[in-house]
Length: 88
Image (cartoon, rainbow, N blue to C red):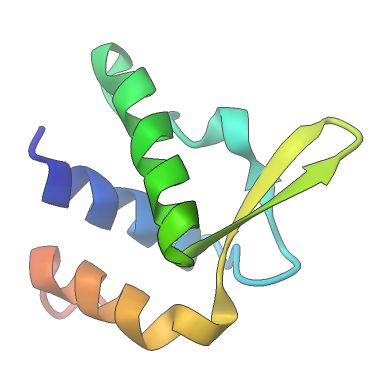
């Protein structure tokens, strides 16, 4: 899969699930729904998105949680719309 498509799919997955701000999902679950051979790539992209400020990673009793940064929603929507037009 192309990097741009992986990023947009990951952001779309979290956006449609409502994982914004305090609502989060376990970091280990992020590769679910992707082909198994790109799981490490998905996690690498998620860490890169966290460095850019689009994802928020937070420690929890089960490990690390991931959610979309509510302050960056416009940029997140633009990335999703670029790959998946008319979705949002």
